Length: 563
Image: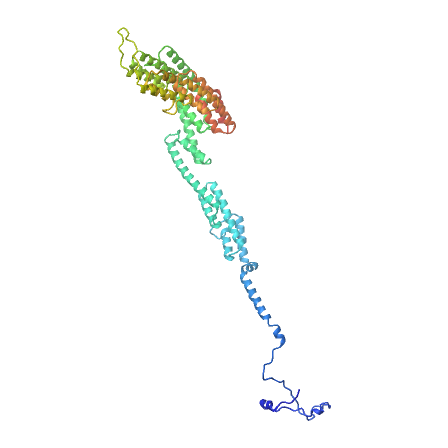
């Protein structure tokens, strides 16, 4: 490298280049400073053509700066997206205090309010501090569940307004649901029943004030209906006690007035309404005492009625007829089977007399006798047959009788072929109805009605007369079948049919006692199984059939003593 610069470079820099002197003596020892030689300063050379290159190390590490920038941006985004979680990791004194107070209020059952101390208000305040906090949201859900539970309990207790209010709060907090829908439906149904109960209370009070104690619209039935719908209804229970007291008072007044029938009716109504009424034992005792006193009078009236019947004093004016004596017996005991049978015997006797009058041609007297019999036994088969004969006889013109035979019966009227065919068809239908057990029902198609229709055309038709008068025997046969099969209700209907068709039938007493025993057996079974209502109904059926049956009195006492 030469230490010389060309003249152009020296001129361009405006200064003179230093010289090194004689280079042949470079190896000679350097003179000390101040040896007279000029000081040399060497400057670096600068190229005209290109700028100096940056250091090589700087080019290798140029990628670090973008990487650092990416990292900074990513860190900032992560902090922004997770700010709520990071915020929750930081200590929040106010939020934690509010959340703790809310949990305490929830555990204490202070669910809602307006003073800022309820669980609902505190959890909502916590959510205001941290809108996405799961603990606060879950707390509000727990408040909603607690409100729903309390609303259900309030509804069960009959506090419907409270239940509706708490159900509304639960719906707000839980956003609805099937449980809330079910509760709302139950509240609506309960309110409807409550309105109906208020109406029943008013109707029952009016009936009680009017003295209407029994019957479907009586105070007793209305108060019982209320208790069946709401067993804990204090108003209905008190009203039923008032009805019981009124019935007991009515029975005592009837006894004092020697009205044993009215007294017995009031006692039975009281027993059906309140089997455990405290007045019943004393009333039953007085009932038995009066019954014993009336028993001798009843027996005497029955005896005199039978004597008058045998003597032929059937009906008519006066108090010494069979009709008068049997009516007196029924006044003492309206359910007395012997007295009812006696009246049936009177009806049969009047029918026999009417038939004799028809045979004698005295249709006027026959009509009077049949009218009297109809008052006692309007559905008697013999009465229906006699009435048909009377109608036929009244329509028949008087036959030309020989002068010496004024009592000869009129000739029966002739029938057209169409009438004869109609009678035969009616009789055949009646026989089929009898075989099917349709004795008295249905109206118009029963054997009883079909035979009567046939006799209305031909009152002297032998088949219709015999079939109609044979119906009591068919009814008794059906009764035995129903009783053997345990069909007590149907057997009861057959016994009533027998009383209508043959009111004087001597078998009715025995049949009634058999049926009463069957009802008592059923009542015993029902009582043993805890069905007091069913046992009471069965006992009532037995009492109507045989009021003096020993088992009736025993079972009545047991029903009153049972809880």
